[in-house]
Amino acid sequence: MKVHELSWSIKGTVIIDGIVLHAPHGKITGLLGPNGSGKTTLLRAVARLARADRGAVHLDGSDLARLRRRDLARRLAVVEQHAGTDLDVSVLDVVLLGRTPYRSALQSDSEQDRRLAFEALAQVNMAEFASRRWNTLSGGEKQRVHLARALTQRPALLVLDEPTNHLDIAHALSLLALVQRAGLTTFAALHDLNLAAMYCDHLVVLREGRVVAGGAPHDVLTPELLMDVFDVRADVGRHPETGRPLLTFHPPGVVVPS
Ligand SMILES: Nc1ncnc2c1ncn2[C@@H]1O[C@H](COP(=O)(O)OP(=O)(O)OP(=O)(O)O)[C@@H](O)[C@H]1O
Image (cartoon, rainbow, N blue to C red; front, side):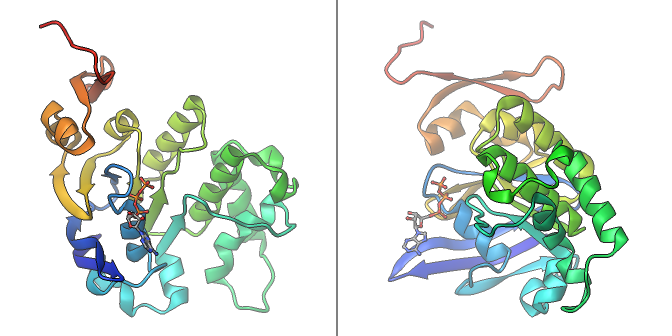
């Protein structure tokens, strides 16, 4: 997936400014940046949930802006941060929404749709919740079901906005491992820099609506960048098992003896 010069302003304030980036095929690209740096805005513009003022997004050579909605939904699935569905429907119904782009308005769910939905629920460890009412789920359970819905869409590009923000650490690790195994081109905003370091192949860092760094985790997550962009002091070591960067943060105001 390639983003070319994507920009959006509101009432004269520039929110994202000339974003250029490349999310490698079949890999996880993490989108990092402090609060308000433009991550959600960029993800929404990429997914065509919001219109950009200028710029383009290409996926496997095609311009996403030129696709019909239905074709777009077959290529791209999104899990938003505050994805709400207040309808009184079952968990299975929510997951089956992922099959909508593949059937006509009058067609009901096929056996294959249901099989894919159950498979996806099992992947996120929610199989036993299939007949539960959606609005009785916890925040973390809803987040996992939304990922199941996105996976049943069989997309080429998966766009995730803070997919682990409601999850306990075990579920956060297993969700990111699942996304990694799915092997889809994934573009995910993440706040937890250690999770990003563990699971992302490529990172893009935003500050005030602009890309300020991009590359492999060990090239991007340096103490200098963490101080410069996030205003935190951190040591960057190596994870003993994965060899990925492992960040240790220092509390503000505490002087580290040299
Ligand atoms: N519709 C809007 N009207 C005015 N300002 C907006 C609008 N949408 C976004 N913004 C502003 O744009 C900036 C970027 O917001 P965005 O939600 O993209 O940031 P973010 O990096 O996702 O933040 P967070 O990490 O807090 O989720 C923020 O300052 C936000 O207040």
